[in-house]
Length: 368
Image 1 (cartoon, rainbow, N blue to C red):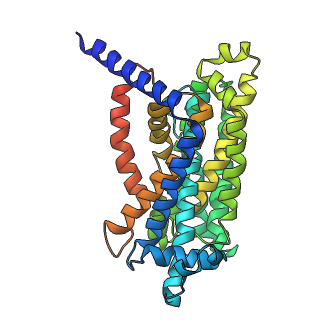
Image 2: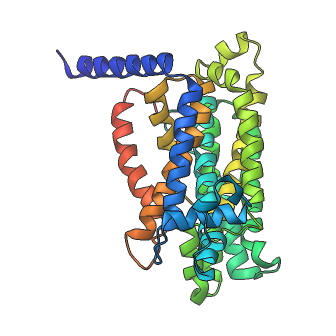
Image 3: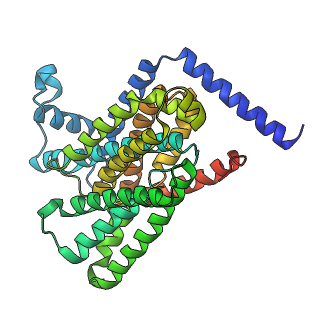
């Protein structure tokens, strides 16, 4: 048997196993299983760090803060110090919630872009959105200063992401590039331009402060604060609601523009709307976490291996698995080089880059 034949056979077998899992394991059960796993890992993430905190203390503090002691008073006896309570509630819990939110957002965006671009290697940063967000953060950190207080960097990063999105759409209209492949090329061109402009602003700024920009561009969750979490969480809820509601359209887009058109889908308009929603999700995530790559590339493929390609299952499971992936990455980032926190973008880039190589080999028949 030839190498290509054996490869096709293995792919068919994995596809059949995914179909079997999707058929015999109900979606609500999978969602519930991943949700409980995510909750347990979030508790573990809150307890891990330079100061180790027991799980009983973690959940006790959360129960007291949420007034849930009535559930079982003997389980949540307040025997912890105020210092540990502040670490759990003010520092680690918002950081962990932000990690889960960013992971879910990036995974949703990756899955959606892989449908509307019909490119299995599509990624949330494909359209230059992260480059625009990085440019906004550079301007805030090196040139304007904290003119808006603690929200200055997130606001500027989000505005940069929106700028990148509108530039991509403008370039696509100027070049009459409305097809999936040409939109990708427009995004790549915009990403190069915005990256160069960002490097120019770094060169023109105070070199003594450039290390803060570099740390932000490597990705991190240090900006997590309760007063700011409403924005990425709200964006995630609205964006995921729209994408899941349009899951049938995304299923059709995978089959090609002509097939989707015959099913009554306004292909070009729907693709643009999805790209705008994805830009908003990515911008909100990058604005608070820095540039974190490869989550949106790898997670949807893992989900498809488990449940097949139906986007009614792919989208919610990708969101949960993306949240789990980034929470685990945050745990590793905090224990691999104690007492320092490794920038989380380094870990996701390392894991994602290796996975990308294997994915290219598996998808070698796809024209890129």
